[in-house]
Amino acid sequence: MALITSSRILIVCVVAISIQMLLSPLSSPGYLDPPSTLLAPPSNSKLQEVIKLGEGLLKKPEAVAFDKHGALYTVTRDGGVKKLQKNGTWENLWQFESQNLLGLTITAAGDVILCDGEEGLLKVSEEGVTLLASHVNGDKIRFADDVMESSDGMLYFSDASTKHSFQDWQLDVLETQPHGRLLKYDPSSNTTSIVLGALAFANGVALSADQQYLVVCETWKYRCLKYWLQGDNKGQTEIFIDNLPGRPDNINLAPDASFWIALLELVPIWPRIVYTSPVLKYMMGALYKMFGIQVIGVADKAMVVNVGSDGTMRMGFDDPTGKVMRFVTSAVELDGNLYFGSLYNDFVGKLALTTSPYASN
Image 1: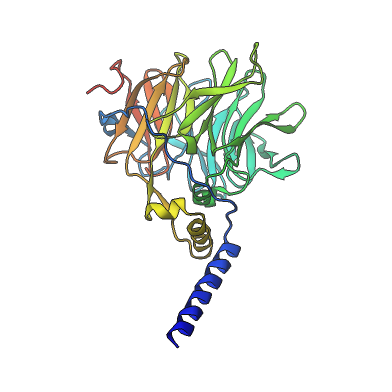
Image 2: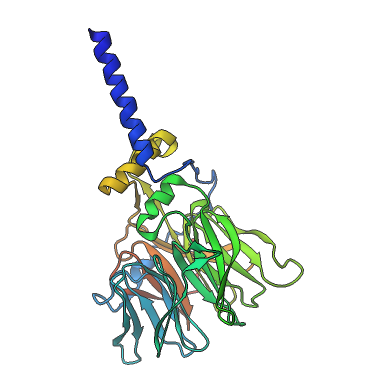
């Protein structure tokens, strides 16, 4: 009798696991170990010294950008596209019914280009809102993330995952497959093309000072890639920097031709075996979709680093406890100050730069 009962229990368990795997949105989940050796993180708590711009008015302002006149723009999690006026007030340029606004850039013509994590690439101008790109080669752009305009008017932007949307980014963490890609939108022909594919969560995009190459962040791999746009290496890809002390989010060109990269740290919620076992990953994916059970967290801290055009890390700033800033997603330099976007805070941070070396204090 005990043997029969045990057999029934085993059958029920097998059936339950099989159902979970069938319902799971994951396919062939893998596992990406962090690099065995990471570059030393900054440790100076400088991000606790930021001035808070628009505190209480800006809900999780992920990205920050400036126009050619030095005016600051940001997008907020409640769908706002906001501009900081010279008198210190914030103008709401446009209000979307969306919680998916991510990266933005301001074109030479003064238009605001937005990445909507669900809709695709958008343009906001005096005429209103225009959807520039929602598909490429017939495929849906599922997770438009960051965008930058080149001097010839091309818009380079990342599609973080061809499988999982912004709202389901945790599934992309769980699956750990290179679903991301780098895209190019040509406004003269109104066409979109694939520049690079098979990226491990394509995130921030930045052009070099001479526009010979661009850099795209691969968040899950702790690295950024360099893609050559011009010169003898045109069309080739190489590692720009790897083994970063955190997972790279957005990247922005600095006035001295270096780059500022915002880094995040993911925190496991479940035992390690959940993230290494394909069967448990299938089950967690199904539980996430059915019940919203979280599978990964983000550390209560903030970190940004400066990387030279030669791919070496030069300096960095952090808030190790998240006392003032957490989950910083972008850092932009203008006139001797750094400005920070965040998916946690209700303000844009502003920090006066110093010449102190990396990891000082």
